[in-house]
Length: 234
Image 1 (cartoon, rainbow, N blue to C red):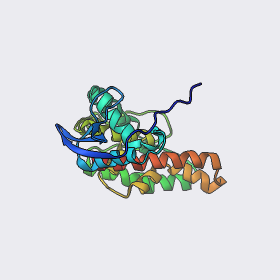
Image 2: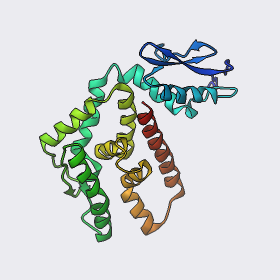
Image 3: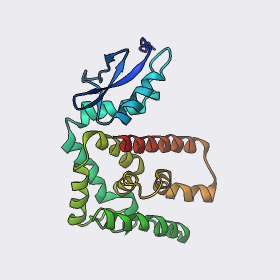
């Protein structure tokens, strides 16, 4: 297997105003996406964050250290062309939202879910105009069409850049409501992430931590917080 990686050939990464926003340049040459489109971001702050990732590369380009660039590429090359499909896919999480499927025992876990998840659902009802109802067990029970329609309309309002970041917020948390809560700064994004891991945290409280599982959770937490920052900068 080849271990070829592109070399760093530039001395400086910068940002310039361009049609549709702000373009990232390397030594005054425009950066292109994998689909050969101009890497143009909607805000200067986001463009500067992307440029900083390019500036931080040393001898070889390491895409693993460029999460904002990856999300920007996805927004330009994929989400912009498939906006309706992506929005509808994410809106579908409302009908099976993590917050709605509750344990029926033990009592302590039930109490944790009522304390944290009911608060998030109450926020969603007020802020999003969509009341999702909790269910006992794991068997799917549809939510009201009116609530799902209200959530779907809000997802469709997101532009491609925010929708690309929102995609990660939803998939990492498993909850459309928590993704909206993070985007709207209902609570600190790190606290919202911990809400999405409530059942895992309860398991840890009972049985202790597993190093491998914790390492995987740390990666997801980092990705969630990066998606939140990208959303804000966009």
